[in-house]
Image 1 (cartoon, rainbow, N blue to C red):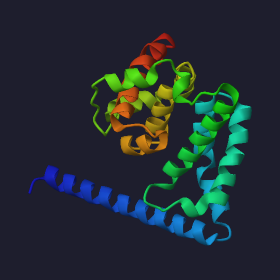
Image 2 (cartoon, rainbow, N blue to C red):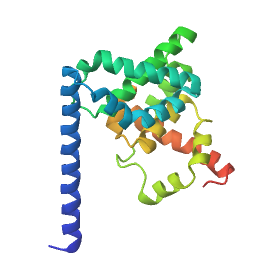
Image 3 (spheres, helix red, strand yellow):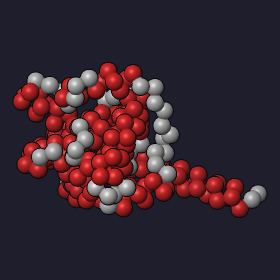
Length: 212
């Protein structure tokens, strides 16, 4: 057995162990929410508050609205915690709640869903036969992505909500493409297309800001 194959074997085993640990944590959270374990909600807020607020800020594009939705999300977790079954990571379920709340808000204001705010986005996304590797960026690309957070954040806010959301979920929150599909309630092919187009759209914006 070569050194490379040994290293690959250890990497696979580590990934399997990490997946199993995440699965057990998700099941433990699900059981705790069903039993309304004291202190669990506080623990979840401490652990996920920054990620949730970041997602809401990028998605809503408005701090006041994001803060209002932030409070409402945790109220939903408290009230509907028994609905979480632990089959997906907790953050996937949490972001789904946040997204649905924002869609409800948009409907009350504009009678449109988040997807409908982008003219023709759904039709264009489904029409593009794009395939992207589940791994996303290469290590080199990831370093470039993380190189200048402030400029990237500014460039992200110039994108439309749909493409901005997928980029944030993939590269900030590090959700898999399958998890993003569950959060956004979109087909996997649509998620891949939005990711591809989002990367293409943000590149010239970063270049203009001297970040690429």
